Image (cartoon, rainbow, N blue to C red; front, side):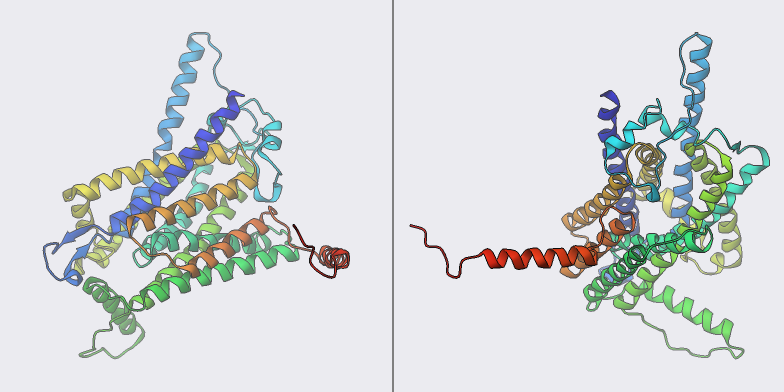
Length: 444
């Protein structure tokens, strides 16, 4: 009974930290850092440093080492005092999407003797080699995919609302399904392919809702300059003749929304690659899930800082305020209290989300996990509406419904109506119609 009482708390904390992470990142994007007193909103400069935000995420993931370290200290202290200490056990409740269960009771029935809050510290299998020594470097591969995916999503979040950002991330199931077929040799039934089609349609509708909302909006001057420089430099690199007196290209808000949605969708390719690599590695080796997050945070931060240094020297220092201007980004983070505080909260939220997410994932069924993810997106949408960051759009409701149905269908939470079921339903309706009276019954 005590174990069951802990799970709702873990689910609640997973939702809270997950929602806060997305909203805090969007809040950080909206903070003005220069020309804030200008009466013209288009001349104000907001905090636009997606690479630094990626580094923040990896610092938060490295925070998982604190939990691992405290657990090791507690176990050593318990053994020295002759107490019963926690020993990682083989968790039998590491349920994947292909091992869907009908209820949380069935997931708990597998009872492996490990408290839900301790499951991230439990090894996933005893019959596999431990991931130690130089083999730990293998986790740098999914970490690099995480760098690319997170940075692209952070750039996309600059151009779209928080709810559209979260809904577009639902395209992840599409690429996970495709990569599982291509690289892992799995077979998808017809209804799963249909589910992936529904997900794509849902993402397209969500993106269309964002484009329609932004068609009459104005683009800030800083965004115009950055987009113009990017297109200008791209054209110069592809052409042998230099451009002279090129007219500035001013993107429309609708086009920026499309770019943002496409970047977020493209990021799911790297996220899906990260999942496939992690599954391939953990299929051969064993390591506690929280240690996996910690190592990926360590490798991810190291590679990100190296890439930031190279990007600043080769590109950023000649283009102040650009995404690769590491010096300006660091100055903005340290000199503006709102950005500094939000950065700290983002790190805490991502670390908490990883811990609580792993605890919930290894304790409940696939049905509950999909429902929790849906609630997370819904809460982000509701909070964004309440804060006035975006407006309500019925078209977005339709796209969100398609995403939820496609995801549930892919995870076998709902089943598509079969031809037999439809025929039985039509016969049942016909028989019911025959039993109805020819004229309405009068009630006194």
